Image (cartoon, rainbow, N blue to C red):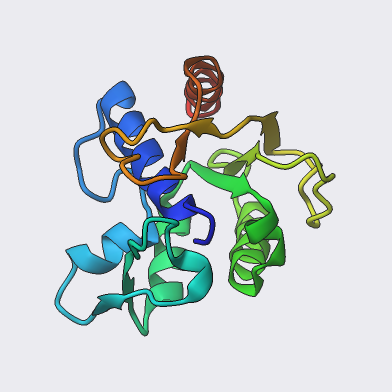
Length: 179
């Protein structure tokens, strides 16, 4: 993800797993992590796209799998909750929109006794116009990028996290949605 989004997702996944007591590697699915955790079919290489490069010159290591979409769909079929980080980059990405559309389809096809819910963290002031983003089963929370202070998983210049207040709101909402 451009604009330090990948680093943010690693930070958020780590925090959620600690807060919710989830220790299985797949308990909080992030494609770039799962792609490295199964078999050895991932193509792992530095992500040299210009928009992925840090101001310090660092670049992320990407793990691409031919079966990424099948893995995403399998994870979604098992999920209670899908978390989306709506940023300008998300809005402009055909892949993010594809994943969103698949979520809407999966949510619509679920039986009432096993709903799939969505939680959208809105990092942008632009109104989200994704189909279904204002519908039943989708909760939206406006949040802000907080400088990560170049600590821990937010080690690079420009990396961001959620403020303690925003994180507490997100965690409380997740706990309410997965009851």
